Length: 443
Image 1 (spheres, one colour):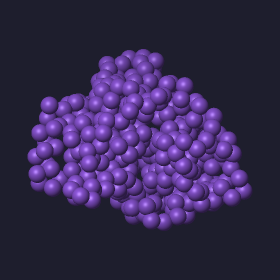
Image 2 (spheres, one colour):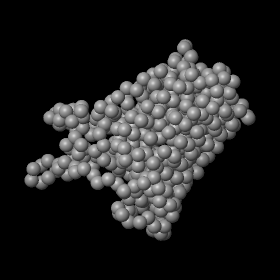
Image 3 (cartoon, helix red, strand yellow):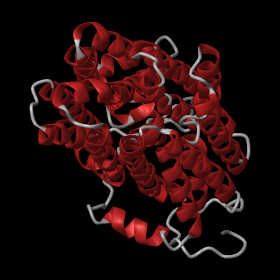
Image 4 (tube, helix red, strand yellow):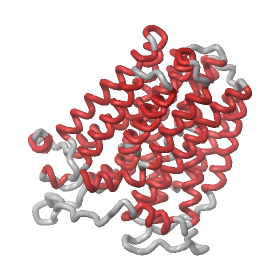
């Protein structure tokens, strides 16, 4: 109802409707990531109110990471079958419902249901696969930049909502901290319902950057795409084919370490870690927001760099710097200077690993399979996050310190930096060519 008139209005002013889709997708990622990040600020308030220890709460939060990751390979199928708008509105409704219902919980199983299952499934339906689908369908050029911008939405969600949430927790209690994120999910769901469309052809456009007709000088409108012949067994078939290539396992393993060292460890436990050092929730959340600001810059820059430079070398640098910053964190003394230095180095590559990883998957497995293969690689990311979310909580309960978890994550990042160099420059796989085990030249 509103998309076509808005598209025509923008077109008359030289603007492509694809950027509206990017803006809505960005807001979707922003609100979803805020919902995922908020529970990290609630470990100690929940522990005080309900008597649950950090290990118990971390186990519930680990469930959301597992489901968030495992939804990835199937999210593209849901989008193909039911459309972007329906899937995204459903996902945001699940996330908002889980947040709202948790404010009335009294039992631990309710925490698992609301913030483990509902939050995990809802956010998983709009995970990085949505960014990949939008960039592929709506853009013929600048895809790397678009993926970088959309990936950075998770950093922006943290940047906007965590300091506000921490302030509300400190002054009004943890239940009030849920309200801003809840309202954001509801508002974005309305925007998605009104403006989101599946493909540019639905608003009478060609993808952004599509080559123009040499006679008219106008890019032809994209015809309606034929329905993909996919079932819910398709991701498993793609996984079976990809698993024969060792590049898949290197990407899966390094992304497992990426999730372990970011979402699972820092996003979940950083505020609690700072609390152990005597730093209250508001300044700790402000440091996380600072990381988000640096990550916003770093991830967009990474998208630009991944279109121009060797993605393996970029990932080597990202993982190496992250590992060194995690080794240094326990010695920062949690001063303003020390935490600011950590926020800068760690924040610049928090999720800057995504654009190079997406491009390596596409170059190795071809455009047709890249989205689903990356879905499985992303599942590895969230499995790593789940291991760290629970493992760091377990370490904190047993040893009364997070330091062993920080050192282990730092060492794992250095391992990932070495592993990524085992990938040779892959030739771009042709669409429709079966995935074969790697040869010495392509592995």
